Image (tube, rainbow, N blue to C red; front, side, top):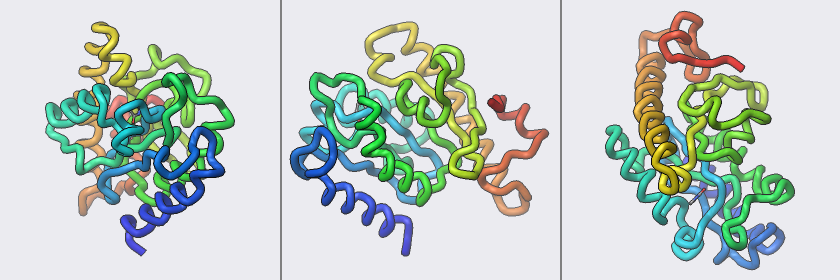
Length: 218
Ligand code: URA
């Protein structure tokens, strides 16, 4: 089965599970992930907002427009990346996700990651960061690639501020924009490393390249 078919199956299961999932009454409440099934870069946000709930697509409101523009400004295209969320629904009044809600939706997101195997996952905000790197402040670790162990393999996580936070605060906007430039650079380096003739595999980074990439090993 291709990645596209496998992801389609996951999204179909998510939709058919709707009635038993928290904050969803029917499939109309579900906001599936979307993007390129072969993406090298994946974004994980927090949860759907008003616009996402209406359109049933992730990151299509003001925060999503900023994300799309940031991609373009850094030579990337929205249709080339995978865009997902911790919760595939909209919490009431856009409140923070609860632990049991995060747990209920975890299986779909985990499967997306395992199917796509992106070179790098950019987490948007503290909830998606906390999935991979718990008990740290985003102010301390944003804008650096972190190699973490996840389900028995090494993956690269790039924590970023949430674009909605950037829209609310000019200082965060500056950090968010600077981090986006770094993210695009790290992605380019990872792509170069995995080109034919390079012996590195797609999840491992050689010791000498770690400095290059400014990787922080937790
Ligand atoms: N904020 C998120 O975290 N996800 C979306 O899809 C939209 C806004």
